[in-house]
Length: 217
Image 1 (cartoon, helix red, strand yellow):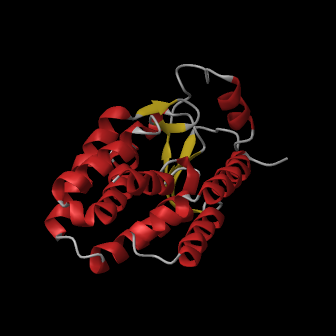
Image 2 (cartoon, rainbow, N blue to C red):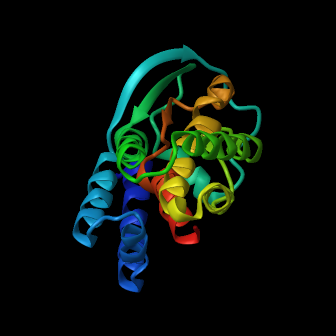
């Protein structure tokens, strides 16, 4: 029986092909200066990488104080490894390492000023931290459009000429910092066997946050 990561990956494929069908990915990658083929390859590699978590360390954790509230979250939790009082903190290949690598590429090649990238990241990180919440038994949750809107706004205000690159970098790195890294202190209260920086992968918010931010910028 597939676990939650495979369920999310299947959902991600549906979203991916829908976006390709309407041309949204082509527009986003054009704005980032990527050929469509390269952009789709990057997205597919990120999707496959979303199934890979690289463990970093383990910490003692508590059972969640409240039950998982809805049927979908209960279903996802049922497919997790059993919680035994210890949470493994990991980094996700598709939802963290690959978006960070692509962000580093944009920082060095897209042309915007480094100070603008840092300001965009800081702004989105603050918004992501304030708007994210621990979801007992699962991880950190955040409204889908909050970070993309914040990242797009930051890019347009800081430098309209390079707003797409600023939006992508600000959106991906900002969410990783604000909703994942700064929320590590909440991991002990989640009651989850694994807490993955970057979440379940590409479509849990990190990569798609960047794509949506580029489309809005």
